[in-house]
Structures are given as structure tokens and as C-alpha cells.
Length: 48
Image 1: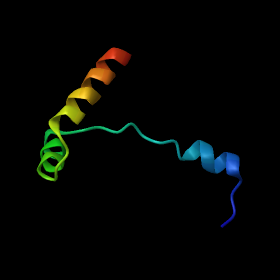
Image 2: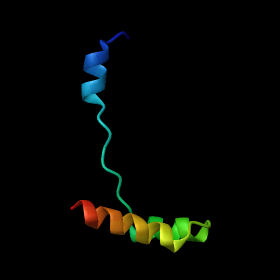
Image 3: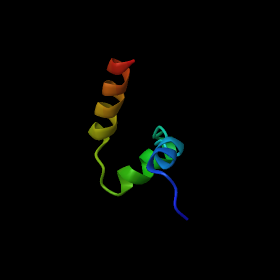
Image 4: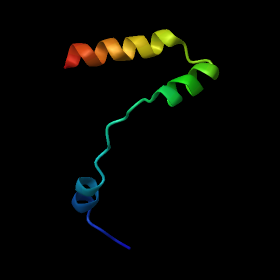
């Protein structure tokens, strides 16, 4: 199926990413450091 690039681009906008307690716990178990999440939270609060 062919579709125009403009139609495709406008209908597939990225959705906002969200973290849950479960995802943070799973990523922490797999080695993502807690400081990563704290820095992400700090940046988000500064942008608000």
C-alpha cells in the first residue's frame, strides 16, 4: 500500500514515554542506576 509521506508523518506522531514503578524496578534490576531516574525526574520538573 502506498501512502503519501505527509499522511504517514502526521498520523504516526510519537507518544509521550512514561515510566511506572514496575518499569523502574525492572530496569533497576537489569542494571540501570537509580541516578538515571532521578536525573530524568529533575529534568522533567525543570521543564515544567
